[in-house]
Image (cartoon, helix red, strand yellow):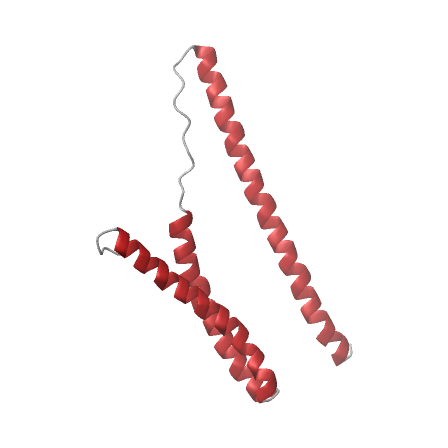
Length: 132
């Protein structure tokens, strides 16, 4: 195979498989949520048939604040690391002008880290100075 063909196929496969993984993850999460709702419905119907008192509807726990904060730390560190490594690799392979593209994921990672620390300060100010 020619080098030009391989150079075109690598990003193409990366994009296609990346989108495929995202679609599978979305479908799996939706299926899990649907099954949970269906199971809760069946339990409530069975309790009504037996004449038992229905338990109150349980709300899904809202872990969005905690999850987004820890997720921002992880993605921030990953983005910063990938950006720095990409910068040095492109600098060595292609020169200074192209290497600046490696700073894009580094900037996104840095933004996620800033979000992590800002959220930590918000929580510490609201909880009497205790960090979570």
